[in-house]
Amino acid sequence: MSKPLLLVLGDQLSLSLTAIKDAPPNAVVAMCEVADEARYVPHHIHKIGLFMAAMRHFAQTLRDKGFQVHYSRIDDADNTQSLLNEAERIAKQYGCDQIRVTRPGEWRLWNDITARKDAALPWTLLEDERFFTTPDDFASWARGRKQLRLEYFYREQRKRTGLLMEGDAPAGGKWNFDHDNREPISAALSFPALPQHSQDELTREALRDAQHHFSEHMGSLDNFNLPVTRRQALVDLKHFIDHGLADFGRYQDAISDTEPFLYHSRLSAALNIGLLTPHEVCEAAEQQYHIGKAPINAVEGFIRQILGWREYVRGLYWTQMPSYKQKNGLSAKRDLPNFYWDGNTDMRCLQRAIQMTIDNSYAHHIQRLMVTGNFALLCGVKPEALCDWYLAVYADACEWVELPNTLGMVLHADDGLMGSKPYCASGKYIDKMSDHCQHCRYTPKQVTGPNACPLNSLYWHFLETNAEQLNRNPRMKLIYGSLSRMKEEKREAIRQQAEQFLSTLETRPGYGLPSHTQGYQKESYQ
Image 1 (cartoon, rainbow, N blue to C red):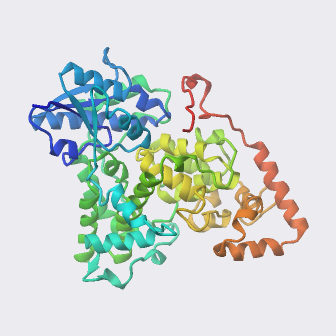
Image 2 (image 1 turned 60 degrees about the vertical axis):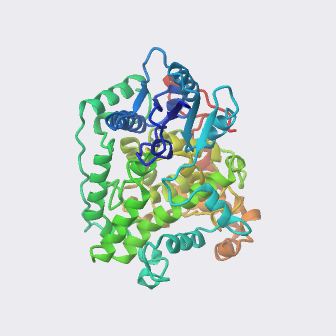
Image 3 (image 1 turned 180 degrees about the horizontal axis):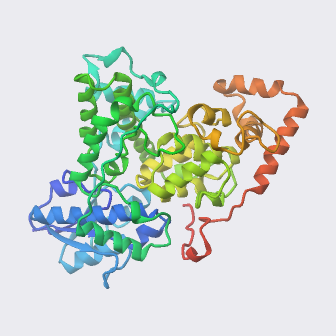
């Protein structure tokens, strides 16, 4: 009788995982903490702590369910510190004749595993059924389409799942209530405090190990409060459903100078490592609409992020890789500014977004898209540099979701595959949607001069720099019309303002880390 080794990865902590559901009684489950996976980019210490603590708890859950589990800890003397090599070592140790693994979250691993399928100890890849769709489902939907737009994909998923449907019609009479979800920050708002998760000895030990081995990484574990068990993730889900969802819609694009979480769910990390399923999260939100506890604009906007956007970017990732990762449609060449690693900038919006990232390994989607992302877009930061940063610093960043969001949505580097226009904005947007500008040394009302917000001149400089590619875009006709009517002396002043600012940006190749972390060798972006 065949004896398989079932390799369970750190983002696959679900009893519904294909490899676990179909496990024969003699199977051995392997879970591995390896330095290679913690260091290929310098992941935030909260992210490493989350994975290590959640993996150790899930291993205990599997043992309680009767599984034979081999768990490789980061400091085990015989740990090879390479995921695939460690799995093969364990398989030989237990006399297993094959290795089974559910589709990983990165093409890098999928490709390495595929190359081993005919090895003496063969590997078998299983499909990940924890999502609403598979990559094959997305490929079937995309076949023959000239444009792969979210809205059409999302509507089909609504119809297929029945979520927020009233017969054949969308609940509330519209598919999309995004127009109602753009209210700015207000001083009168009060935000729900997050649940504080207790730490048992297994969690404390995992965090101590993370600190011991990765102390040079961004962040401090002193305020670690991510869910590391399914029970804790369910607490976070209930808290959001009861206290955040009703106001989430209106203020989902708002930005606060002091509050990192607002009404956002902060469930993405738990979803992406498997502690929650997208089905139960969407159904819980839908139920709030049906019982009158949350308005349709909030519930639809939230479900669209999961049933629509999350599935859409995953489908794009798996159908477009590996060539997608090489795209640089706007020919951006700049390295990432050093202050992305320490928040040392006098631009208040960037300083706060980066500091919140350092503190929490979290920033909500508008901070990522319209603050750190918009600035990188306007400055011409190359996709490699920004993608690696997002992958490193956010606890919810698995490459399948991070790469399309960053390369396609933020940087418009995929030749318009994801979006019909770049999400570029001047300081006026930040002033409208946040309370940052009142605390900043720059003013969003000035384009040139010593007090002018750098985003203003950078915005027009970006449009000029990329005019050949963007000025024929019908969605940008008005703004390029404004640029063409601008007097040349004004354009030249803006040009000089932007170029002077860009010349002051301190960057260094690789990860821009302090000198004591130079053990990180930047891998080729292949």
